[in-house]
Image (cartoon, rainbow, N blue to C red; front, side, top):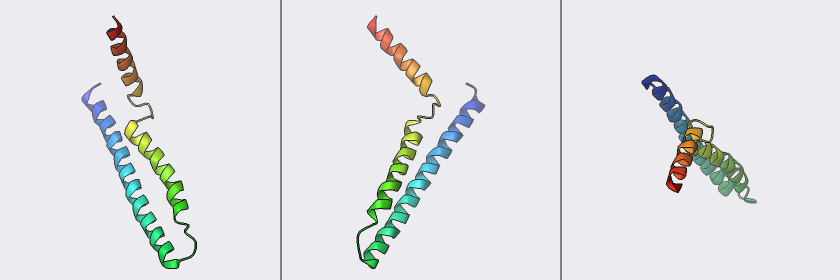
Length: 90
């Protein structure tokens, strides 16, 4: 892999990580606002439902971003791990 390909790959990964960080920040700010609205407005406590539903989406976004399940480099890492495991059997 040459330097240009490495830079492109790094840029994609940085973009994905920044996207996740922005998503997490918006999640926190919006849910704090919803919590405040629910506390001021009184009535039944409903703020947990959007928190839960959006939290699932944020968790999936985090998994895809941090663990990189999209396949970029995943196959190569699995192959290298399997080679090392088989070398250890000798």
